[in-house]
Length: 59
Image (cartoon, rainbow, N blue to C red):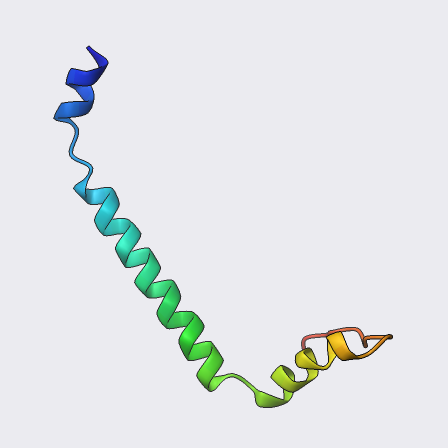
C-alpha cells in the first residue's frame, strides 16, 4: 500500500524547488563575494593570523 501511494506522488516539484534554492543561494554568495567590502574581507582574513583577534562588530 505504501509503495502504491509513493508511486502516485509526483516529486518533480521538490527537484525544481531544490534547483531554484541552490541557484539563488549560489548567486547571492557570489555577488556578496564580488561586491563585498574588501576591508572587511581583509580584516576577517587576519583573524586566524593573530593571537588576540579583535571583536567583530557590524558598523
